[in-house]
Image 1 (cartoon, one colour):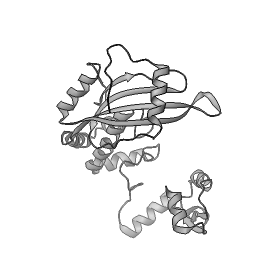
Image 2 (cartoon, helix red, strand yellow):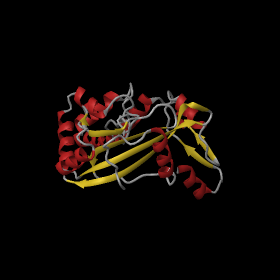
Image 3 (tube, one colour):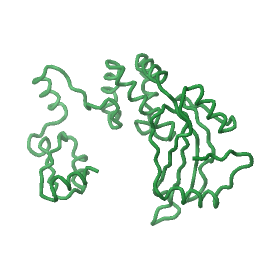
Image 4 (tube, one colour):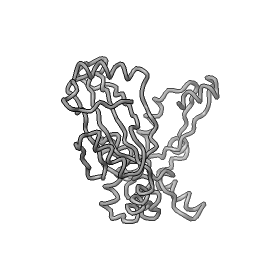
Amino acid sequence: MLDRWLADEFGGRPFRHVLGFAAEELSRAARDEGFTAIGRLPEYPLIDDWHWDRHQCDQYLFDQFGERWSRSACGYCPFSAGRRGRADLIERWRAEPAIGAQALALEYTALALNARSKLYGTVAAQDLARNHGLIEVLAEFEQHLRRQRWSVYEVRRIIHPRRDDPTAKGAAWRSVRTKFTGHHDDARFVLNTLAYGRTTTDRHGITRAEIIPRTGGYPAIEMSLALAPAGVQPKERPAFGAWWDRLHHQITPTPPGMITLAA
């Protein structure tokens, strides 16, 4: 999307793209140089001209403004909980519980649609808050959930094989459709009814039902129902339905007694 905007804005004309990578971030600069954008001329003044590392940048900002700046303006940046940034992130959440609660809320919906979508790679935001005793963050997050309307989402995936290796995982297509929206208890009842009581609630408090477990080999399919705050927009590629119908028929017949979910 950014490349399209640049093409529209500059029409392929050369332009300077100045990036604030610190002197120790040589690997980030090397990766960035490989990104393609017509006419883009990347510059890294902190590396090439000033030779400022993170500490020098931080000290400059403190000298100018009299306060320490957070590493990222985004309180839920998925890159901010690494080895060097995690302590700063935790302290920011401790000082600003609403920002931490926002991160937990964002992750909650993502995990409902995909249990593998932890905000920080292998680490869940909820676990960070619990492990570091961020009681105010967790309390504000729970209040946020109580204020929401809730939906039952149908989530289907098609996992294609790689073009160069049919035994390896390739592109994954996802379809999301809303089956019901209302009060939390009503949505939970609808989910339980659609899934014939076969629901589970995980340690993050997310209730879902596995309708079709991921099939073996590729292409593979899977289908689940999940309970999450309302607001997720429907998503489906134009070709998804035809692919799903064909693969569903070929790979896994509908189990006896299983309800058919109409659009």
